[in-house]
Every structure is written in C-alpha cells, then in structure tokens.
Length: 271
Ligand code: DGL
Image (cartoon, rainbow, N blue to C red):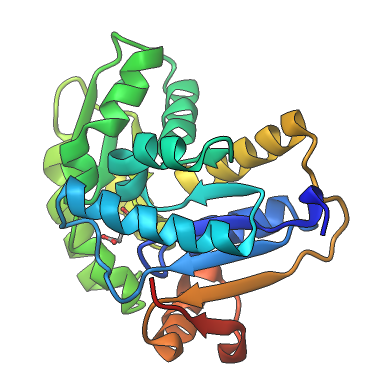
C-alpha cells in the first residue's frame, strides 16, 4: 500500500467523533478512514488530563500499529489536553486536533465580536479554546461553559423537543447573557453538532454556530494537499474499531455518522 492509500486514523473517546468522520467522508470521498472509539473508557470529558493523555496515547499507538498516514483527533477533550503529547509521541506523523480549526473558524466569523464556547468540563478546564483564539486574536472576549448534560442527551437521540431545549437553555441562557453579548457560539464537543437545530433555536437568530467537525475536515484536506498525500477518487473505505460494546457503537453511532454502520464492520480491540 502506498502512503496515499493508507487510511487517515480518526480517534475519539467513543461515538461522538463520528460527526468528524461524517464531515471527513463528505469532504474527502476518496480517503480510506480508520476510526477508533474508546467506548470502554468513555467518557473522557470528566477525567483528569493525565488519564486522558494516557488513554489517548494507547489509542493512538493502536492506530499507528495498523498503518495510518495522519491522525485526526476528533475528540475536543483529547485535543485540549493531550495534543502536544500525541504530536511528540507520533512524530513525524501529522496529527490534527479539532480545537485550532474550530478557533480559526470562530475568529473568521466573529468580525471582532465576543465568542462563546460550550464543551465538556475537561475541555473548558484545559482553556484550550481560549488559548487558541487568543493566540490569533488576543483582544477578542471569550466566555466558556461546560455543558455535560448535552452529551448523554445526544447519545440517547434526544436531540429535539422539550428536554433537549431545557438542557440547552440551562447552559446557554447565562452564557449568552454575558456582556458584551457573544455573537458566535463554538460547538466545542463532538456530540453537539447533532443538537445543532435545538442549540440554534435556544441561542437565537443573532448567534452563529461554529461546528468544529466541518472546519477540521477542511484543515485535514489542506494538510493532505500540502503533504501531497491526497487519495483522489470517490471510493474511500471506512472501517471502525471500538474497545467495547460494538452493537451499541453501531446503533448509537448512526446518530452521529448520519448513516447506518454495519455491525460486521465494527471490530473490537483491546488497548
Ligand atoms: N468526545 C468528547 C469531546 O468531544 C465528548 C465525550 C466524552 O466526554 O468522552 O470532548
């Protein structure tokens, strides 16, 4: 297999990263994609940075052992807490996280207006979005809020209706009431894109949502292009690895991937 036809490794704590997989599949139809969801150790968003880094390194090594040409860290929590450790451990393999692409898209859309971020507790604590935004736009006000309840709601498929609206309002109402009023809301968690309609409804028409899944897919495309590693065509294959519960992976995963996942295409691996 030449380098171009090697798969892109996509890693997440579980099924949520399939929102990034979906964006990659749409933008890069010729690429082979190898997804690893660490369903045995999910969730990462409530764990310490040391534990997340340890888990992420073992998962990344499982992917590199199979041969990948790039690692996409679909998980915001891992991107916020373990990206430097992963980049160092896997060098010279290119490693792309979701936070910098998300921050760049937010700045581009903000036109100087304040930015709000919702994410897991771990991502908020890491301050990674605030750092990434301030590295490029030091004066831009950034506010952030952990929104942990939205994660299980997304996994239960409760993405619309009263419960989802109430949960979104619980987090967004105080966040968006800050002064000056944020005009951009970054969906800083793999699970939130499936709640986009509800979040947009609660946030109101003067707040634009930034989805890091789509912006990450664009960053991956640009990086492959620079490195001369694009696999052109339209017949890229997808294969899935999970560390536990492959049936739940394919059932719940559909919500995030937006397409059926053949249980026969989900392999259980031990890290
Ligand atoms: N994948 C995680 C993230 O994007 C959310 C789920 C978890 O807490 O593991 O931060």
